[in-house]
Amino acid sequence: MTVERAEPRPPPTSPPWTEKQSDQHDRIERHKQETLNALIGEQVIHTLGEPANLLKVSVRPLWANFYRVNVFVGTDAVFARIANSFFLTVDGDGKIATSTPRITRQY
Image (cartoon, rainbow, N blue to C red; front, side, top):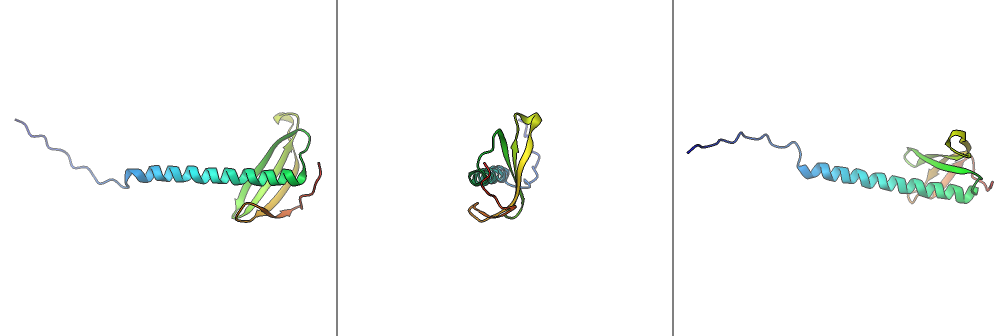
């Protein structure tokens, strides 16, 4: 009869579920940000109007509640140009509080 001796394992640096929770938290935060970006973009287009040949509304968070929004137009990506650009602040619910320049109906 032989007796096998198991090598002692070092204790894990963190519980295995921590990484899964962290990944899940990251996915949730990313989804929240994408949803907020979509809401901000919709508000801009609702106020501005929809330009002809609208390609994309790009919403980029800068810091805290400050965002840069670019409205791209063109027949395709090769001929895309920025038709409108805004710096925004939003409140906790994602509602536009201020805009520079002011968003006015153009289309």
